[in-house]
Amino acid sequence: MSTNQKWTHKDDELLRETVLDYTGNGDPKSAAFKTVAAKLNRSVAACSNRWFHINKGQALHKKDIHLSDVIAFLEEFPGLLKENEELKKIQSELSQQNEFLKSQLEEKRSKYEASLEQHEEMTKLFEEASNLFDGEIKRVVH
Image (cartoon, rainbow, N blue to C red; front, side):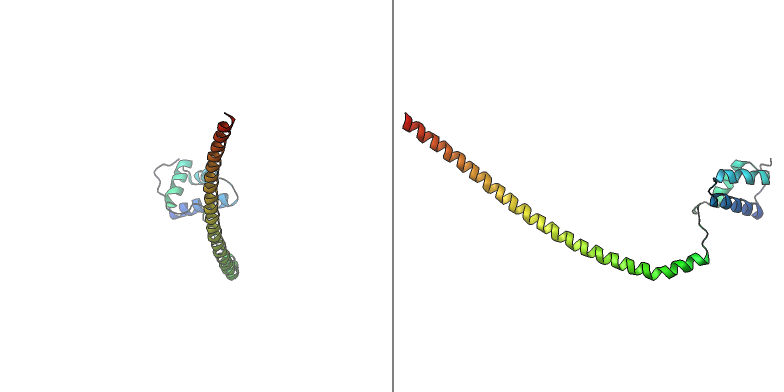
């Protein structure tokens, strides 16, 4: 196995095609590196390192885009734009509804707190009246 052999454009192409073939079929890159290593009389590690070196900074799982894919996307695009506008409208309506509900909640919270405060005041008055009444009964009995 040669260790200092320079990579040629042909070697890089074989590596690229083999890896894309394997991964496109759901096979691991490691299997592709093993196949290329045997064909080029290189180590699996050398093939792996070369793959990562030539793909540095790029997505390793690029999908080949075909013209038919682009055409299909462009044909769907107006519908996607319309759907996006509808979703924006719904989002706006929901946002307005949310703001309204927040204000309603705050109003209810304020009323509750006021009622609670009144209840506490009334409870204190009742306790005071009860204590006064108990004191009057005790005076009358004695």
